Image (cartoon, rainbow, N blue to C red; front, side, top):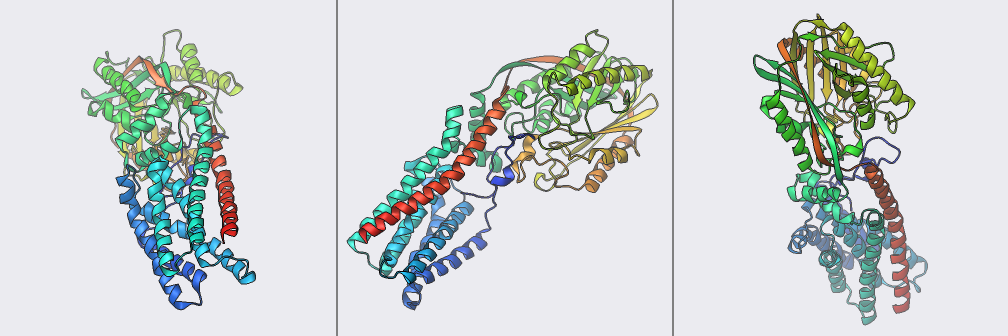
Length: 606
């Protein structure tokens, strides 16, 4: 049963990624749905009774329109009384879809009646026959969307078909055989729905020992309502498969006149899995947890992938607590010696800017595809470049050139080896370009974006400008899941008309997955021209905000953080893909079984 923006999980780019756009259908508005119910009821009545005008009129009201309207508005309170929940617009849409399923069956039946009138049962059998598909469709829909209990869902599923049968029998009184056939049709419809749901649930039960169908309602409530109970249920599912890991949190902060003006927060966390679950929406969560004392908080993507997704917000709070401790425990500012943002050579995957003994390293493969850099690769850069103790690193995965299924950097590959070498060279070049003297820092933000129309998350676009060694370096951070390939270079060119060197980054925030389109990279919903204007405007305001500043840096381990770990996302996406495939096949199979079995009953009892 499709409703208003029913969600399904999606991960980052990859061959196994499930794009939610294939699973979403938006229910029509109530007036449109009610008009559709009236229209389909009229067509069904004509198919069953025309040219008997009086029976057609009675059948329209008693067998189709009134039962459908009562079910449309009665499904929601009845489901609630039985411990489930179904929104009114979904209840109305469900009644409309039942009529839509019944119509082609009625047309085929009436056609057969015109060709073989003696062999084809009459209108009562047809009306009763339609009850089976109605129960089948309503049961499989309500089981997932209202409550994953056959006993609690069945009375709600029977509401529309029983009312329709009552109206039909008032127009044309049934015989005993027809009543017996009706019972068989209802039972067959219910059993086929049970078979469909059990088969569709098998892949997730086999892999995770949990019912995926039982998570549909919490997922709808989390995405649509941010319902705390639904969020706990989903995060509880993830937490069952998580295990502890020792991670790090680094803060690069800039203070003006004794107050922090901007803080670059760098947790070794991947901002997934999706919606606002776990570490998803990490930029907003960390900004709120660090609080106003941190100034404007920027949370760019760090070297990490779905292995470091956090299962619940409690794990995010561990980083918030460590971050607040770092803010309180900053030592003296770093040495007043800095460089601009520099690249060691043409084609380097890394650029760096030095503040005292701290090197901010920004890594991208653009204009080639660039996506997640594995934590192990970042950890190797930390160990090799920073092992002599002369420099402390703040690593950023720019995550700014999206092509589905491409751009990941994994440990031991030639690309990873080049990145390590380029990072080492970038830090060396930045240290060589550093000169004594203070820096100036400016920051600006632009929010009020709607995810559905822009693909940009709650933190909007944030810009940081640093003037050091007589040159300005600008960083524009967009809260979203990567940037379409080809967008980064023109945006950077526009930014470098404002500052000397610039880079555009994304947060990889998976909250943008919860709208139609799934992965939803930046640029898919907002044009390059609009993004360029926005980025340039924010950067120009950040440059106008420049003022003398001091730099602080802190790093602390965050031990025992529960993460989803290697393979979990691949297993989940594979199971979801198997579930979708099984569901599609079983819809066809159980519907054909329903029709075949009901036809056998019809010709035995007619």
